[in-house]
Amino acid sequence: MSNRLMKGIIDMHVHSNPDLRIRAYDDFELMEAGIRVGARAIVIKTHQGTTMDRAYLCNRHNEIVHGGTNDFTMIGSITLNRVVGGINPKAVETALKLGAKVVWLPTQSAENHMRKMGQDTAQCVKITENGKVVPELNDVFKLVRDFNAVLGTGHVSPKEAIIVSEAARNAGVKNLVLTHPEWWIVGMSLEEQLRLVKDYDVILERCYAQNMGGGKYKSNLEDNINVIKEVGYRNVMVSTDGGQVENPHWELALEEYVVSLLNGGIPEDQVYYMTHTVQRNLLGMDGEV
Image 1 (cartoon, helix red, strand yellow):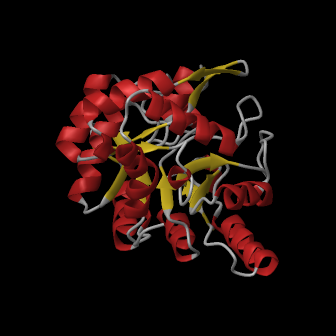
Image 2 (cartoon, rainbow, N blue to C red; image 1 turned 60 degrees about the vertical axis):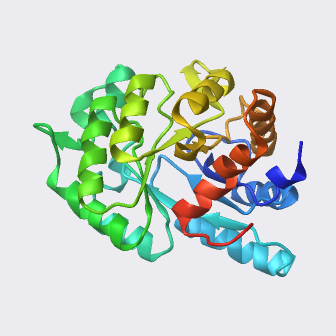
């Protein structure tokens, strides 16, 4: 595989320790893996709230230990589950002021997620009511817009994703990512993905594998290739959603993903765009990496 495709690569969805679920790497181990492969950045995600403080410590550690010998950056985020008060504009504002670049709508607290998992939806974080987004979400959209951050749709349903996409675009949100639409919890059909790309110019985040329950994972690699050929590479972002002990370590999963795209007939320049350029554009990281 061309070294050019790992050099400067950016993954906007990786889980690491500390976490309620044991992950393969802790933050520093993930940082070192990123440095080893020449990655430009990783966005760390947790279902338990925020990671921008953890990202700061990784970057400070990198500076102290490696002394500016690499250009790797760890990037933080906030996920609007019940643990941060759900759709909580103050929490979002604080996270963005402290350096978070990605705001995810509810994941494990999403009504769609809880229903699919057979949980009590009375405990969910609602994002829509009567076909419209809840009022607090409009305040979140404004913050995402003003900080030029990225909005990820989390584990919401296809119907909710359509409502959110329209409202977010109307509010001026520039960077809109549909979080792993292929995962059965989200359960978005190809037709729905095509519609969201056509109507709202969303970025489809297509991940390495999906959790099928019971510690079992299903590869998405073949399906990802088919979607890229249908949708077009400019609206697809390669992410691993990595960090699980059941899957290969982050850098191995990412390399396998990239190789699968090349072997599946996706041209190298298009793979580069989906692993470097689209992420730089979303995160505001200008210039070649």
